[in-house]
Image (cartoon, rainbow, N blue to C red):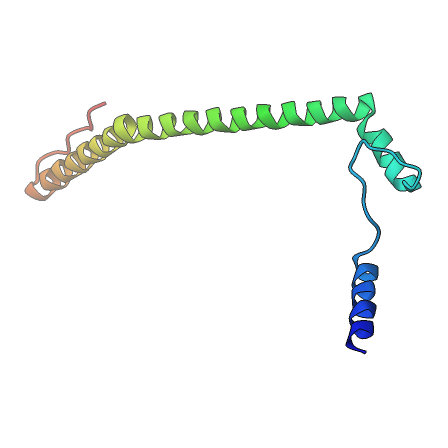
Length: 116
């Protein structure tokens, strides 16, 4: 009795697995229409050209983003090293000029025109 129930459960397991799928590129009489169409699409020249174009586009985009990132890094560090200290120095000089003008006006001296 246990053998009968065991054999029926194993056949039920086989039914749950579904149909056996074949490898792409292999054709047999049991292939469905969708499988045959997908194989023919995969083997078409247009599919291969489209795939190659997509691959080339992805490779080009990756290179452009990589080089743009490098250029942004170079521009950013150059700005920090060269331009920011110049801006700070110009601000200090302007503050010093403003302070001299303020002191001169407090002491009663005629205002000195700012230097250009």
